Length: 254
Image 1 (tube, rainbow, N blue to C red):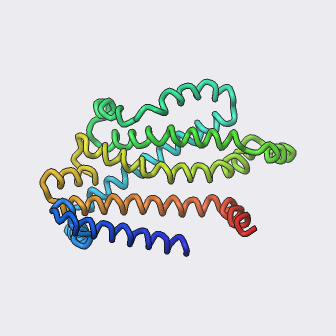
Image 2: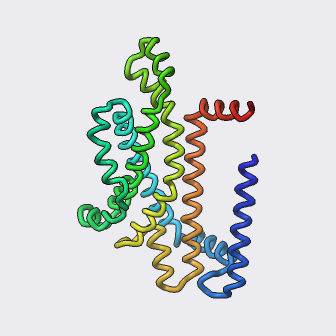
Image 3: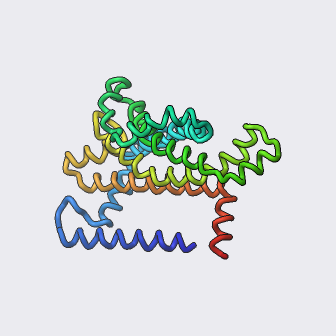
């Protein structure tokens, strides 16, 4: 409940700051939040924004899903097996600092102008961030917990399902939440580059035509997409990491 109040207060402060900035500048490129909100309702009602919102949601959701499907087994293998870690870690250290958006032209040449290059770029960016977190979490499992499950003669599959995955999931969720802003930024860049659909395209197109109210409606749509995904990640975390939440609550109470 306290978190909800904090979010509401933060939203009110942002809207108030936006409103005061609009009054101070008094320029068409910064309309009031009230006018931008009305514009958002208008373009949603008339169906102008909705298709772009849906396609952007699809692209970022599939991109995140692909990144998870690839990063989880890679990170776990690197965390379990030192030989695999020694082989793959140098590749990660070389590729991780490179801004992945520079590969967008190459991806466009290979996969065209459809959904594929946007999804691939989002997955490509998030993959490296998730792999590092998952590998470190798998390596950081306490020795005494490993000994306990070994004493029970657990198989590798049982160790994976009862120890490794549960231990790594909180770190994965935290990393995914932290990477969400990056995913949306990559989505926006990809949709403004040789694209004809999506919120990024919509925002840039309306900016070029000087339709600032519609442009801010697109910005609001992108913000709502990010907020919705953030909320879904929190719901998923509360579902699959109940033990971690209970442990954190107990430790805070003590």
